[in-house]
Length: 272
Image: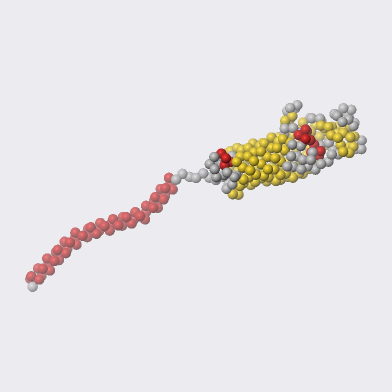
């Protein structure tokens, strides 16, 4: 009996010694596993936040803009260019065309825009008109010696940027067009007589005015600002503006069949 008890005790001591040596190792392995598990759960999130912090902020896309422009306007109709040249060297008068605009992007490469403008000029050129009907049934010629014009065009423009994906200056190039209408008023001081040239020996003097509405269509090409807070651009347009003719009265806007012009415009942009 004593031998059996002694054998059992020896086996128990050996087993306990083995277990005592293996348990710390198991505990350490479990702790390591828990640490690795914790690291796998926390680190991706921490890394993501860290990466987001280090990433540079992207430049804000310009979705809307406004600005103003100044246009050099060259009439292509003979009556209009004779009465209203771009620059009158005799008295320093010149055509003034100032516009304001507001636009916004409807796609990555397309913008829509509204553009009202004001055009005005005056000079003291003598312009001779052969009337289709005698004025007051008496005078065949009208001679203007002051000429003034005022116009309020408004148009809706669309621009397409075919090279918007490029990283060069070419990405700012656009093609486009616009439609709208213009109110045009002309006022002249006139001498009526039967003399084809000049106003000598005049028989009747008066101040006259005429006005009309006319449709506008204009293709255009150019470049815009760089997309920052402030920029500038330039464009070339050709305006198609058909006029209502009435050659019974001495006005350039009534003798001319159109108000067509080549426009060279410098524009200043402010992004919103």
